[in-house]
Image (tube, protein in one colour):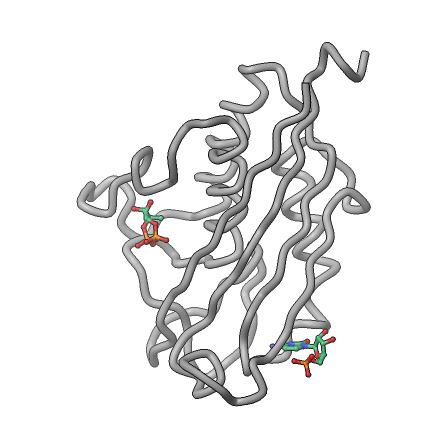
Length: 162
Ligand SMILES: Nc1ccn([C@@H]2O[C@H](COP(=O)(O)O)[C@@H](O)[C@H]2O)c(=O)n1
Ligand SMILES: C[C@@]1(CO)OP(=O)(O)OP(=O)(O)OC[C@H]1O
């Protein structure tokens, strides 16, 4: 069986926080605000996987009212989400993601993001496509108030691929 899922997330940009996107620490004057490390891309990807599995969203599994997830490493959350996919007998077909940010420039960090995300999902970097776009200075992303990310995943049942 093949299952698809999509995820979308937004976090506010603020001073005094690290800018961690796709598991990569990006040097920038501002960072993303959240209960966890606010890795907007890994949250969108985790939500896409949970969507494909019919298991809700990350807020349901890792509530932002739970101190256990304060400043949580979103890569660990992705690994935990991925263990749910493995448990249900799925492998990654492919993932396609878009980061929506006026700044900082993402392009130099995208290959490293794909490597990190692939490792967390027992996949190859070639199975993961990460794109970035500005919104031409329009809206909250264009004004640099926040960063959004979208992800689509295709999960393939191990029974189908073997
Ligand atoms: N934060 C961003 C936004 C965009 N890019 C790259 O720049 C290219 C042009 O973006 P447009 O919004 O003008 O389409 C695009 O191809 C992205 O790869 C980026 O690196 N970081
Ligand atoms: C990741 C979690 C962890 O508590 O908190 P936040 O960093 O606030 O991020 P969000 O995208 O709002 O998802 C909810 C939570 O699962």
